Image 1 (cartoon, helix red, strand yellow):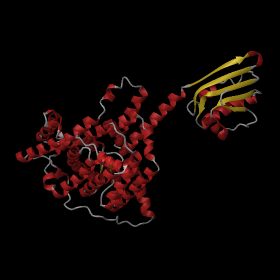
Image 2 (image 1 turned 180 degrees about the vertical axis):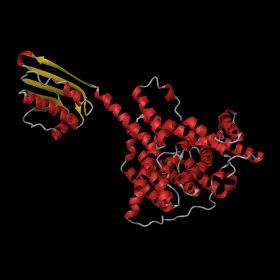
Image 3 (image 1 turned 135 degrees about the horizontal axis):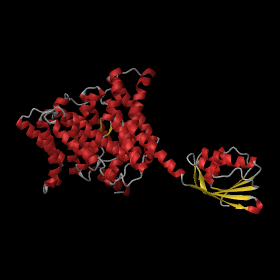
Image 4 (image 1 turned 45 degrees about the vertical axis):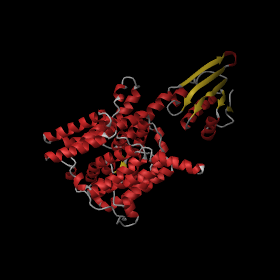
Length: 502
């Protein structure tokens, strides 16, 4: 066998079959937890439950092959459902399917434009805030199931949490079978045997009894349709990619592996197009289900595929059994997810970390929880982090000078970064009214980043020249010299600008 063929087989083995038992069991747990969420998100969006269930099956299966992050679960999500509610209410399901297709196209374009690489601009404090906010939202989403209910629900939920946290301590079997799966199966059996009158998955909505079929959205193909769906598609594409890339980053940390963010963008697009063509709504990566998958032992693409396939089998062929699962058992699983997702060390580090880092993290959490919009929270966090960074770097500018008395010559030496945040400090460091014959500005240890910095240098040089002072600028590095030459307003004959070290 050629080296290329062997390498390909090794890659397939690593991505698909390195952890078969763990992946299949984890996929089963995820599929069970996906059902009530997909139904709930369908209700939020204002569509039939089967739209969310078909979407979850389709997206999970397609992303298993096309995605850039193994073991990440993508399906119908609450963040996406909130965005599409208005479109469904005003224009109906067919326009939602069309918007889903366009959303997929936009995400594929984002992948080819390598927008996934923008994740490097998201600071660790923003990611921490995003994770903590999601943990809070996941917990808050369970509260309706725990309010105005009988004591049986609390008992089942408490028993579920007990099973989830204590079962792994059992010898031999504790580490073999995922405790969330044991929780769901055990409590379903108990509820059925005792005949408990508690809310079940079947009470969430009617489960579909047929396989999804290929269909094209029944909307007029014209500019008016595009004007209606484009704003929704763009918003869905942005929120979907943001949540997916953030989730991929979190799983990278949890599993100590890396992922291809640009491939993930394309994969999400392909999955959403497939979902729209099979009558499903748009979706993206799910932090909660992805954490369930990883904590249940899922590590490869097989776990994502298993979750999608098992989900379809459960809702289409085993719906009578699935409908008997008590919601309290799934609430226990989701509470476990919220507890496991929250970065508890971020609370301990509040005293140790800089104030700016804490402010960014808390702002991200606050905005996401207040708006239930992940994009707003992350955007607020990124902007704050950028402002704090610019302010901090702007302080790393030092300018000192020496005077050659007999010749009336002052030598300025600039050290640090000159850009929009430090430009005023740069100008203020020069005594523009001092009677001098000649000034030398040594920039060999400085860097000019933007047109604000160039304007600041222009200001200093021009004011000295107007006072009859001869100005010599030395030591501009290549990048700084390029931006100064391109955007500077001075007449090159008025000042001597030299490259390299003085």
